[in-house]
Image (cartoon, rainbow, N blue to C red; front, side, top):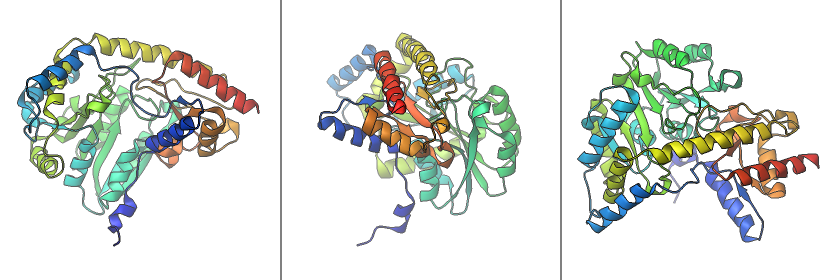
Length: 386
């Protein structure tokens, strides 16, 4: 029995592969500093946990509506309205188990073989994986370091064609931590405003920023009706294991997404949705504390990386990653990442895990203690000295 041909076109997420290798070394007695996985190292805020426990006690353990509990969808719509300054209703919200289905389902519903999708490179690897899986044509746009890892707008303009069906944006950005400047977002809206395409705006890190607040393209004139907002609870509320995300989309796309949801997952777990209501409507103090701690780590870790020979690290504007240029070491980024794991006990990712234009970079997650981050820098320094 042979696998379907399309399985040759689906990719994976290298972070989990590196985690497996790092765990295997730990099982051999090695001390590994984990800077590979992109999840907050904070516990889910207590009031959210209590809401989840209470929901279990109250019997929220059965099937719920495919689109999501009405109360949660109302809370999400209200949250989007006050954080983006736009008007959306609960009927435009689809709740799903994690953020990835809001990549998977809309692309599956919209793309035909040969359609073109523009996306950032380096970028979250599932974008390119799903484009290829569906037989569409990936059109990567290199992110430019001296533009804060934003698009070169001239390259973007030249890449648009009559076959362009979708444009994917991600700000703050994984893996670079870049935030697309507001002026660039407006320029992108001007470029695509009169085109028959849809925008997937991945805003999963939108609350984790340190300087300029990210501007959602959905807030600009004429953009809301052609934008899918991807957001969720994993990053903002340290709820990665709760598996809950959502999309806010044009009304005509909701039913196709619901059909794909009912064919794959039926619904998102009911008790986690009750916890999600508490997350959005409850106190936000823990979010602010987490972001301030990430800022403190960013400043110290990036400064320390910039003291390493051959490293040049731009200061990220958001998310919780550092993305240093390591070309000055004279090593390929994949070779260097593998060596740092094996020889220095520092688990990180090669920039090539996020696309061809990530070559020459490494990605470090700063979701670890300050002590571990500084220890990692010294381990790298000793490795380079050898």
